[in-house]
Image (tube, rainbow, N blue to C red; front, side):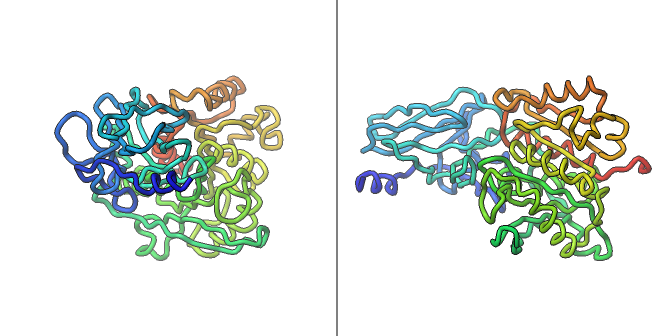
Length: 385
């Protein structure tokens, strides 16, 4: 055991070209110039050459661990054997990967190790490395020279949980200067095994919103990112819907210049957060008029009994719900229930919007694109031109 611990802390990656830090200051999609086809991942720590991504979207990993007997890489949802070279460097090259962000870690002689060459991210209920397979033709989630909003960390006491709860709040670029303005609010949930940092760190939410607002494609809004756990800090499987309605929303409305009514309040979430969105909004339709679920895995509202039977009357549902939005990645298989549910809604005549992200799976590029497509639709009313 002692040797394994020493091995874990003595690992290092081959150094070379400098990678970029991620958040703050990470410009996604950019990586330092390097000869050859493969380039260091944009999520590498400074000075780290590997992992790399080539033009065929293959990820290339190298790890120096000369005393290890077996090294595997856990990438996305599976583990793969790495091959040891004569120099003590273990290597693995993936098949072409879907665009976007992917978690990974190493398994060295049975011990799981986070890559010390990568920025760390909270996902899969643990700290993981991350690799970004860039999408060269997209820049909607990149840093641009536009006015920027602010993401603030805020704590409040949850009396129901008897614990402190942390939220992150995005305020749009003009919030601090246009001091008489009031804003609609979107409550935005992360996925299972992630936490309230996910949308800001992995999702580049603030860059997406800053760019949309600068282009006048989206209404300036406040975005609240809280934990999907029912208790305090951290990620569990509970939805925390009661806490949101009885504690979080009142705190946000009393602290920020919100338009505090259901017509100016929405909720959206990815994966488990999408399921939590369905649960919360069905139980509290008096609080939310804008509803969105990205890649929701289960518990879709029944087309006859959903929303206290309101879905059985498509016309009444459309009057109550300003937007019912669904999305998923084209390549999602395991979590692919959204497309059949969209077809079921169409047959029932229930008004909704469906978006399918081309060439992506159950990962952050799907959800970045979903937010980019959703945000311009939010808080638009029929009387607006």
